[in-house]
Image (cartoon, rainbow, N blue to C red; front, side):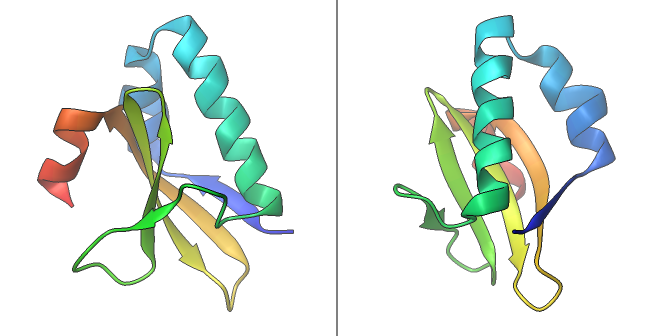
Length: 87
């Protein structure tokens, strides 16, 4: 199993802005990443090594996978249109 870590900005900013029903779905997807960090529908971000995204409705979870340390770092949870501007 992978250890999932969540960046502090995700907890302080991104998660607080989510509607409650989306927040629950995002938390469920994040928990699923512990078992399988490469679930169906995941995509690699172009130009970024070991950085991926998964969809939760119109929101995206951006994360890094470190297979050597067996960790997943959640780096952003934002609406589809805004999330790719910084990555």
